[in-house]
Length: 229
Image (cartoon, rainbow, N blue to C red; front, side):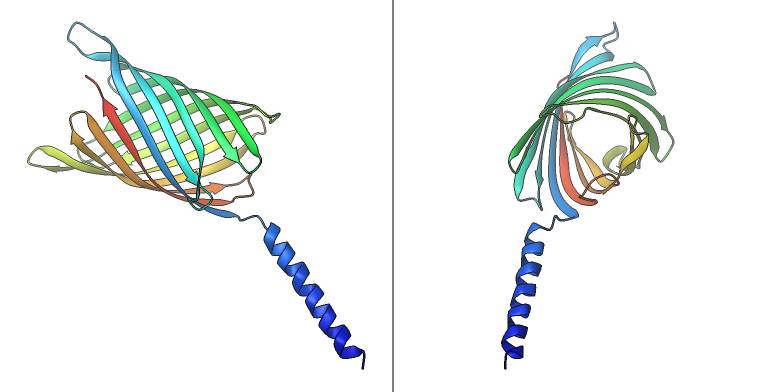
């Protein structure tokens, strides 16, 4: 007579444990929405009015946790040196504020980009090398990364004017302090120049994290680029 009630109690206990485990389970995938904005303006021109040094103001926001929380905000500035035709050097600073559940992370990023570019008849290819130092608060460990991104862009022309440019890029993060690959980003998108001073990039990005609980991140977004001559 006691077997049936005991069996029912065991089923209830097992279900309760399973439910509790599911409630604390951390998701391994995420979907994000990213919006980036830059404002570029000349700082120094040569006698022929060719831009040699430009300043850039950077502002980015990201909605994380399946695009449910605006939890990643970034603000910074950069200097773009364009003295050589096919080479750009760009040091920059970025302040990052991340609001997580019960914790707020403040991060300072110092970056140096060196980007050679080769243009062919129907496409261009560039390879950006980025050295990045991340200075973190809240007792978290600082990090140093080397990032290598290769980008291919194919302009679509009509009547001698570029209407839009599909592009694809791959960006690999190397953790220099721990000597390992940290993550990899694969991006596909379309760049559209609406006016002389306004361009927008619409993109999809797949991120594979090798050293994080969140292993995969799918993102859609737009980068808005404004320029003052």
